[in-house]
Length: 305
Length: 305
Image (tube, rainbow over all chains, first blue to last red; front, side, top):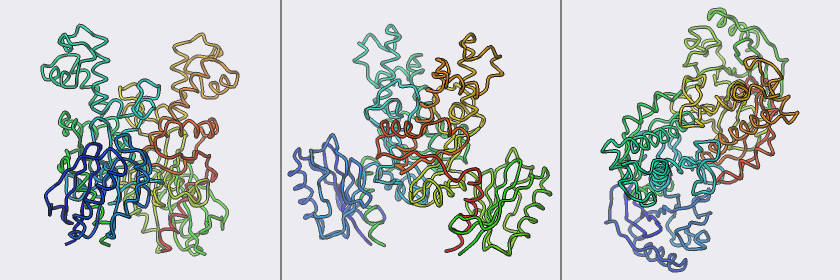
């Protein structure tokens, strides 16, 4: 059975483990802090690889950023990684084949191969975290686009008339409303309109958090329920658009905000509003290490042939 | 050189011609009225095929409706075609191979093989007519989804909060605003808010047409300019979403409303708002017979191998 070293490069830590083609862990998961300079970061990659390459057939990287079509390099700069990261020549780190993929795509691949989307050759992962990310799989192939940048589903627009700036510098992306950050902004906006609402619990608007919102929602507070309902509609809206475009089999929801949605409700509403055939909606099952796991599985799937 | 009979089944007429693999017409284009009963319609298909099958290698149909994954049958009912149309067994009409595709997808294929998207393996056709239709081509393959219904790009949502019902029975699809019909509705809504505007030219609101809007726009009428600007933004919004999802190379605009947009302006604005790499925007070149042409080319491309 083939094995790969999966390496997930995050802004604060690098996680890695040896994984076999069934997705089982052959080694423990190890973590190191992400170095702050490019040189140190590349040295860390080399060290990790040197320690592990004799035990694996291939090496996979999951990393932030846009990846080139050949899956060998990062092409964009990443705010949480050192300047010049996109000059890194990953394939020089080992004589074993190395495959680089965007972390969101790698996570989607993990769900497809060993997680909640297993067996569904057409599936879409929607990651609801501080942003909205995701990956689209069509007939068992990752959607990568003309330059490797496809699948930016968080940047579907949900209003046409310039209401709220997104972190990407444009207006009204799905992520500006549907992410945890977006939900927090919606809560503050609504609270600002109703500063005496009990939802604020006497706090300054700026100090309100998503936790306050969820607390209020659980108490059935009118303002919090309204904000949460709007949020659900915004989440569903993006998924309806995606389903009408892709006619997919299943949506896999991951990310920290996933716990605040009811997949069954979302699935019912999605399929009421969709004009293609129905899709399932489920929570992801591979957890926080999905990117690392997916990077190893991608390397195995791509090089094994 | 391989040749195919392309047959485009429209609600009012059926067009057909023999086309070679370069997309050149080997016969004249012929047209007959679409019969109103299922039996007569199927007889017409048989007659057209019997007259032409000896001169071709394959037969292609372009038709309204969702097509099964095997490209042999229509799976949905079509409002403009006889009841039971979806029971038609197209492949029984000839011993030559028969390929059936949705008319919008077939038109997109024509643009890809011999039209404005020639040479671009990643492209999206956007048809701005009485509705919004289209087709998505990824790495030279038609996006068809799990059941053949993918590519319903007219049913991307552009508002999350239930403003305007779309012909599909759901709210706020792109088509409900961006199509010719949608633009007409926006004009009437705006005129209703300003019934004394010179844009109405003394007409009843219900009698206003898109022609009145365009006339007013050319005269620089304030209300008409506002409606047209909003429409442009709505068109761009949908294309930004599509580009961020697909990272495509080129958008091909077809349909009757195409003449009212400026591709260069749309392209500039699209690429300003997009977070993936830039895409081109051009008008379609294969004209009204794109569906017929595409159906023949699809049949050749699929069966020639």
